[in-house]
Length: 93
Image (cartoon, rainbow, N blue to C red; front, top):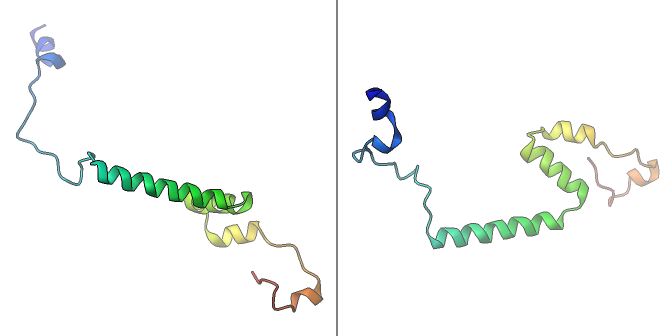
C-alpha cells in the first residue's frame, strides 16, 4: 500500500534539472503564428485553383507517396489523331 501511495501522480516530484531542448519546444510566439496562418492561407488558395484531377494527382504524389511514373501510367492520355500529334501546340507526355 505504501508503494501505491508514492506512485500516485499527486505525490510525485517534478524534476526541474532537466530542461527541454529548444528544438523540442513547441511554444510559438505571435510572429510565428501569423507566419503559419499566412502560409496556410496561401496553400489553401493554391489548392482552390486546382481542378479535381490536378488535386487528385497532388494528393496521390505528396500524401500517398505514389511515384510519378506510376501516376503517368495510371493517367495515360487517350491516343490522339495522327494529324494532331504533329501539331506544335499538342503537349507531349
